[in-house]
Image (cartoon, rainbow, N blue to C red; front, top):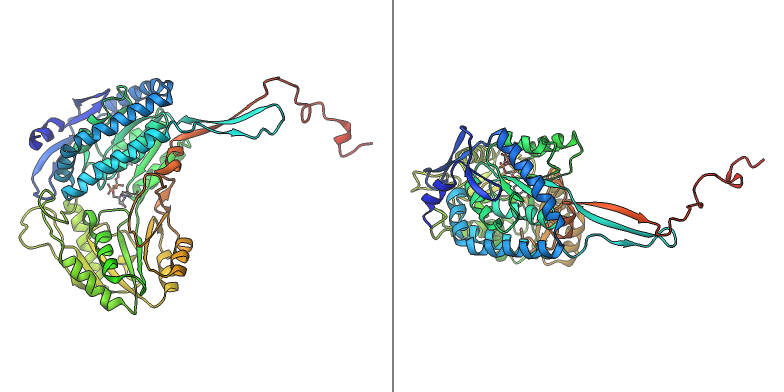
Length: 502
Ligand code: NAD
């Protein structure tokens, strides 16, 4: 594949009715390679008429899709997974060029998209409801699972393929149509990804590009029936408010500010590698990045030295080369991160490693992975999402204090604890207020287990059986095959059951 030609072909396009075609929009946004600062292409701000067309086509395709057997939907979704696997080298290269993440992380993202699609291909035909013990003898009481209709998926740029599949594969398996509005910073790769869905009926999966206004039109459209959103808190709130107007069901996966606790019983060398990975994977632009690292005072100094040593080993550079850490996604994000870091230093934190733009990079949006020590609980850096390459280490005097600080946050996405103490393990699992708790296994996902947050990190769940139900209605059906009179509660009421029996 010639990436330049591929980006040119996808530039200014939308994916509608089973094919790529140029948008009629005149408004365009340049797509910049975060590693070089060079223009890769551009995306269209799709027009209201284009939004109308994809919504109409999605509704028509959804009716056909839901009329098929569950086995048929399963077989087609397995074909989609196979197509993703075939496209892996091309998708991974484009993803690295467009978002900056190391090629290995892009390739992993395609692999994880495949397993999630295969998982939902099977889960979608497993059960469409349950038979209940009847409340009345002779009757049949059961539930039916039905699709929402047309699901709008609105995405950020950090895992554009995986986060799409976590919602789209579940939504499709549940019988829905899907319209995706990708991030402005990952739209061209998402358009390429649409090729993997070619075996689906035309119009069942479509992609419109553009900014928040295009997303807003899709969310507010009277013929879209559910919204799956992943992104920042303010946008999540705007979407939840818009959905409240018509009680449109919505899934909100918003920001995180995850704690990472290290206790003296932990294998410190491994915990140091773990925190380095959890803080700097995808240049720290992961919703579940380790962002508040609470280290027991007995091991704090030793642990800080180990984290610095691990961080010093990381190779920074263009994600297509032999590197561990690429650039940040765009210039504004790097500027925001640098302001946040400078403020932490003003408040008294010390830079133990990094802290600068790396030498030797005149272009691109690189920043050194940075380790902060002397971080104290009240500092602002521990109270908002960092979303950049930072590992702030805060000293705690006990496990109780670590748990208390972990919970003293408006966010509740994930949490990691390094310990080999059984009591601490089970206390952490029970007491931390978050959607996921990882003990000695940071930021791992499992297609079969639910993912999602509490508090300001969002509502609802993706993945697992919960993640299928997110995209389905549950309908209760009650049948009396004999059509008997239901005299145990119908009119006329018996005089014996009146309060005044006189
Ligand atoms: P963002 O909120 O700025 O944008 C997300 C998407 O929303 C984009 O596609 C954008 O165009 C769209 N959008 C903006 N305004 C809209 C509106 N009014 N109506 C509809 N759509 C609108 O987020 P971002 O900066 O792209 O992403 C980073 C954030 O995503 C971080 O906070 C990160 O933690 C979060 N995130 C969360 C998870 C999770 O699973 N909880 C996963 C990945 C990223």
